[in-house]
Length: 202
Image (cartoon, rainbow, N blue to C red; front, side, top):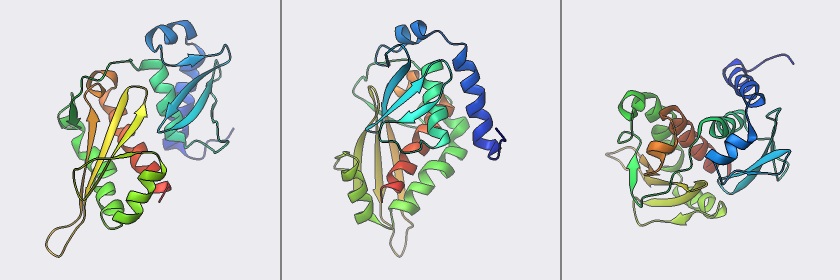
């Protein structure tokens, strides 16, 4: 197959190759919540069920939609490297987690600024999209919602509308188990996936 989108297709091919060499039993022991039926793993990401075939690493959505390439790569990385960690009841910003300071600049551009200007100028559409996704309202920001992200991992998106003096702003909060359950680069992608999914539902 000819690679057209190098930025997304090459990483996906890399993790599919690694997945082919993986041991399903090891994955099940490390991630008890990742069901395996002998042919594929099942994971629910933001309320949508995905099947990841083993060993070839093909990712399909239960609703027959085409999973975005970053989502496919993220799910493969989770099966290969993720940890199942209980939520301690707290919340953290990206910056507060390990390596957050190092990745904060790309994170701000990919997640926070995009969320602010996509949602902060269209609060009603943002609220409707979040409700459509099954998110739960939270009493923070001009609009805020809590999402079941993946397994025991949860995220919040808080948005403040802009006015004549200040531009719109946004914050994303992660359940505290993200700090040890995911690498920093995966936390960036998790934020990106969440923002992109909400935007697609607006």
